[in-house]
Image (cartoon, rainbow, N blue to C red; front, top):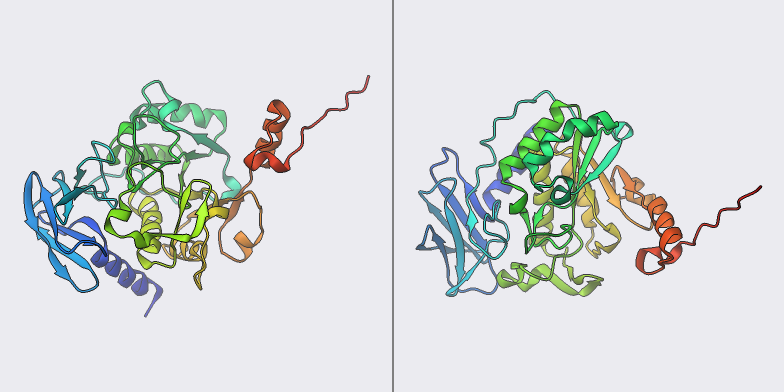
Length: 352
């Protein structure tokens, strides 16, 4: 089997086993699929109407219904309505109904964009909510020429995954597949990326695969197996990467940003906290899955250890080094907690 055939076969398998709501070819039907180790009966409520889901081997439940993009839905586990943690769109926030999304409908304009190598990247870290008074992708899009004139060649978006509330830095994401609704709809994210590519700017996105936020994480409602007490992070319970569904959750999420949204790369947040005792570390699998997509996709690890093995062993493309920032912060504030514990205040030796 050729590399192309192997990639196509893998893609078909991923679509067939994808959880959540998947719009089928023709866009007139949607397949709803759930994996739950807790529920004995599962339904899906679509546009206010309940539909039974067929129990399948492996603790899966599935229903194919004649609804298209825009349909609103929630899953009902043993009588309890629960948001979809695999939702591609959550217009009313992480506690509300999901929306069936068609991520293939956007009309891309700059299809000749071929990416940007890491040594050509001059990064600007952008928080969508504070970059403009409006705090939206559409408003940020209008300011892209300013970044280009500034000398920026790559925009690194701070986390976009849906989190509770109306404001935040994004590091408490709980629904990783749905862009944070107050910033805009999925097509607004695509329009931003497309406009950036038209100006010769690459776009990266910060992804948090080391913890989930404390409010709105519904994965345990489906199965506690997503998480484990073998590991613990500074932000909560550890993710269990020995569980194949958790591995698929993050590898599928990485592919979504790069394939559906055409991002140029990922900044993996706090990879030192991505603990994994599997035979193949999740970072290796992420690097392999992304590089198998072909084209130019850059994977960066934000890791205070600065271990070369992140590149030479795990296969990532580079390390996002924060040492200069930390040294400046310690020098200005005297703070020595957390990440800043290993840094000393710089004392200039002024000479007359």
